[in-house]
Image (cartoon, rainbow, N blue to C red; front, top):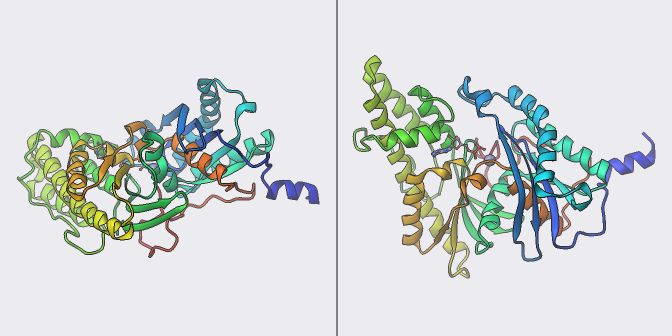
Length: 379
Ligand code: KG4
Ligand code: ZN
């Protein structure tokens, strides 16, 4: 490789330092959603979603009861280019009106990450645009600012998805302190496993929530892990095992009402655990940020769609003197608008990536936090 082309590869092509407003194309391929979006961000950090296109691969993975990495990577390859064109078309913009391309570079499944990041690099090189490598967790963490302009750092974030359960103090864009994390299963994963054990299909969260409405939440006394602990961590594997034991004890005659009662009792245990752990984090956040008089608690991730959880956290927030802000479901679950938005905020700070940047399957938001088995795996 000659010197000139090496230089071109190592340094992302730059226009003059980006000035607001900036219009960014975002790409998301870290798990089982293939997504592209265009977002415009002004000098105050307010974002306008010009397009937000998502292809959910749920059907491709349903038969396996979970995400199959190889199938996910192939589906990203076959869909992403069309989604990018659809995102531009829906935004009514041509390539010349795009200021940068932002792609999720981690954490997540390596095959999928490579599809999105390589596409981002190709666009950056071909269109001579800056590239922004976005941390998927950072995109989730900043998404409440996109949907609610009242939310500005510092704020407290509960991120609950299929891959993560974390409590984070968002001190600023790029400055995150983890207050708590799951030490084993992620909460969405626990919902999915309970659904699988009961033969309710994938993804499990929505169907467990529906069944729970018809069930008796007091019939089974499942454990409330970590309740009252000083650190704000979570653990869900014991709860999952307790559900498995209850199913085995009921034996082959497990009926629809039994299933509903198990779902309701499981969800009740989850709600009480979350309420306790979030209250713990609210207290920690207050100690860390005495200057914040009207703090926000914000939710992100697919599990935030659960109405029983939202209602419980509304109460916790009120009791702790926090306001609750929950992005609409389309911004809670994986999407590219949050990637474009995080990318735009980083672009305005001059944080672009060289074209030699690598995908990172593990990429914790708070690099200083103690490693935990599931911190920084997938979001
Ligand atoms: O954030 P997300 O779309 O994808 C990632 O995991 O990155 O979250 C998906 C997770 C799945 O585990 C799904 O079962 C869970 O969110 N989920 C729910 C609900 N809707 C989705 N969990 C509980 N209640 C729901 N209504
Ligand atoms: Zn996610």
